[in-house]
Length: 198
Image 1 (cartoon, rainbow, N blue to C red):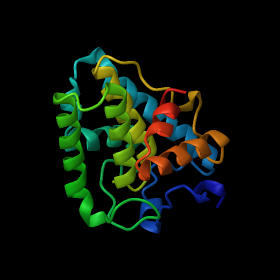
Image 2 (image 1 turned 90 degrees about the vertical axis):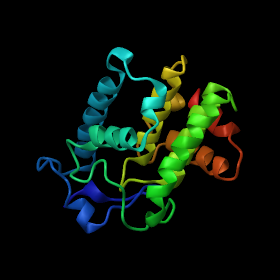
Image 3 (image 1 turned 45 degrees about the vertical axis):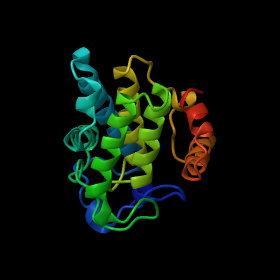
Image 4 (image 1 turned 90 degrees about the horizontal axis):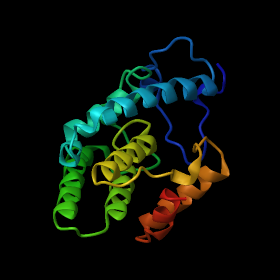
């Protein structure tokens, strides 16, 4: 096989069962996978933004978060929208995901209701904690970025730029993003806030 499942140091590796969940038989290279996933994500983003009829609190439910992941990756992966069941090189223990995602979404609703932080910071905190939990087998960063974008838009702001370009595997931009996430892990959110608007 090709470089399809070649992993990079900061990526989430897929196990054999998850790899078998690939739905598109024409995908044989990483670039094919990237194209298929990006097309699926673009469809999901358009769906989520359609008519702006969905309010911010509606986005902040476990059902909505999982549904968004399924729409983002469901044309490519059989397991889209389902929580991971195994340990990863990143993220919390899998058995805690079912409790931590609803707790996070409750926190975000509280932050919004009480204006705990500015809107950008609330959305970036949502993003960081989703990535930290790492609930899905793969696509967690992309899912968390779209969740943050949708939230900031529903709070009346503009979607984030996330560095202004794609975070393709191995790019220096991706390295800056991962570095900002690690700083946020250490309770320094400033680099991630800056990166989100860069």
